[in-house]
Length: 453
View 1 (cartoon, helix red, strand yellow):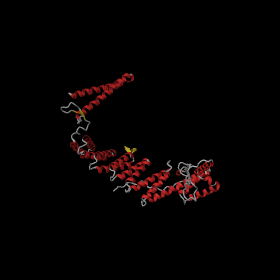
View 2: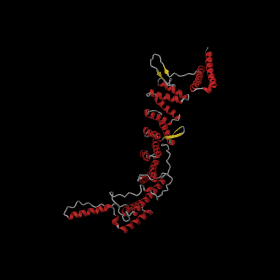
View 3: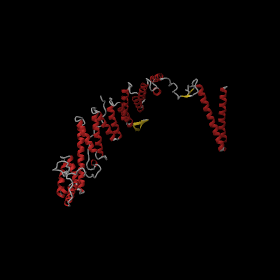
View 4: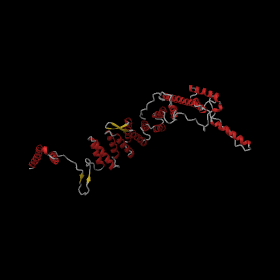
């Protein structure tokens, strides 16, 4: 009977279809807009009927099990809704842990992770909670979701610090952090979209915080500095490297950390940074490196960098002195000529500075080259003499403070005291001035961290 109905309905639909086609052919020249629309509706209706009939036949001949999202339980009026695939995730901690283990053995990582996490959420104080957390992190790492896996490991260390898997969690986090450090960019479908440095820094900081005296702590602190360098945050990188030197002075990485601090300042000075003290910071950092680690394999490179910095600073000071000399600001010129002599007493630039100071003394006299503090002292004495001649009591006498000299007194013109500083240079940074090129040696690359015993 059903078959007969099927054939009759299909025959009727087919007859309407062909009747519509014949109608179109017969009346095509004289069809109005309304008639055309009616014909189109007939055609679309027949197609929809055929599709519905095919779907009904498929449901009859190919039945499949469909999990019910709505579950009714005996003696309960409340209706419980479960997403597909969650109906069997129930029971106590032991039962859920057994279900997760079974899914893991069957190779269903996704379901195993889901059950482990749900078990920890429902039974956080269970004997299986720490083990389930560790297994969820391990399976997530195997799935390739490194950032999420690191978060699970971090939760294990913070929530269950007494777990026997604590050391494994630290090692796994460090492994993930270095992978992100090498990756540098997050990828979506193979396309880099954003940096992974912040995630790596967060992982390394968690290691330092959770295991301050652990095997990987010094390496994690050093890698924070490396990540900050990749980000271009020089101040934060130096701060991280300084922490390595202070907290782990006997660790082999302290050598590399101390060198990197000098190298960051050296790079900034060479690039012409706005910080006028960058070259001095670099020189001091390299000197500290040589003082602490004189036998390091990087000691020759540090000495070469110091020589380059001092030579460049001397040339910069000489250029500034010559600039003021040409402008006939002789007192300022003498101040910078003395800087040249102080920085490199035996250099060719120092000889040029000495010769020019002698010429200026002969040309304008010593009085015109004296710093302003000397004139202030003379004016003060004149005022005291005038007051004494008028019968006023002279003020309490103090021994005169001699002017500060930078270098040998016979070779240098007197420099001002602390109240009279060097005049500002004509350029923002003498290291970046044109006419003083610097061919820097090939810098030592950022060292790769090695295991701390």
